Each structure stands twice: as structure tokens, then as C-alpha cells.
Length: 158
Image (cartoon, rainbow, N blue to C red; front, side, top):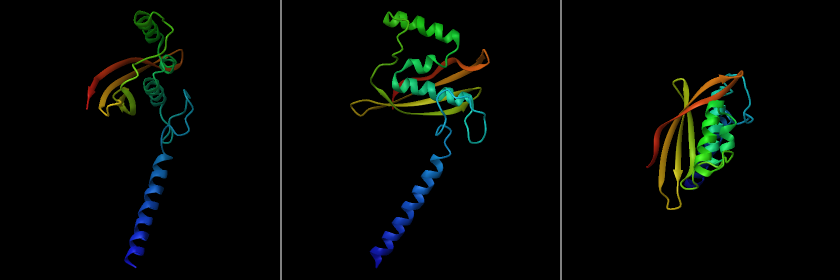
């Protein structure tokens, strides 16, 4: 009988946890937001800057600079292509960041007039690292774009 009560309590806690996780998961800003979508701000949808910050972070995570170039201001895009030309010899190369350590996770939060992205990295030895950056935004041709990226914390071992 004692085992049955314990199983019922455990089952109830597990069910409550699942319902809570599902409820939290369905309230996420990014659950149904298409890439680069211009969604109106409401309690259920993210501001445009949050959507752009997510694209920016995904570009870093996947090493796909084209996700970043798609949301950059013209000035940033010109500087990016110049840097790629200097670093790789190809201004159209969109591979960014080395393959290790890789981005294991990131979080995005409002930060003053911009968005802060905190990255967590891992490597094959099991070491953990972190870095963070702040994105600033402006309007260009009626479209919100990333106008600056400021490193707040360089990659450091955690």
C-alpha cells in the first residue's frame, strides 16, 4: 500500500511538471514566429528587435553568417564583407566563428535600448565557456536592422 501511494504521488508530481512545462513552452516568443517576420508587439509576440536578436544568435550558433548579414545595416554589412575579405580572401564568405568551442545555448534579454545575448559554449573535452554581446538597432528604409554589435564579455572559460 505504501508503494502505491508513493507511485500516485510521483505520478501526480510528474503530471503537474509536464503541464507546467507545456504551459511555459507555449508562451515563448519564438514558438510560432517565422524567420525575419515583422510581427506586431503584443504580450504574446516578441518585438522586432527580439526576432532579429534570435536570428543573430542562431547565425553565431550555426556559424552561418548569412543569417546575420540578412539583418545587418548597410554599414555593418560593408564592414563585415571587408573583414571577411581580409580574413579569408572572399568578401562573400559567410562562414563565421571556429568550430570549437561550439555554442551549446544562448539567452536573449532586453538591455537598455538594445538586446543582450549571453552565449554558453562547450568543447569536446567537456569544458564550458561563455561570452556576451549587445545588439543595437536602427531603422533603414523603413525596416529595423542591427546597427551595431558590442562585445560585453569575450569568450572565457567558465
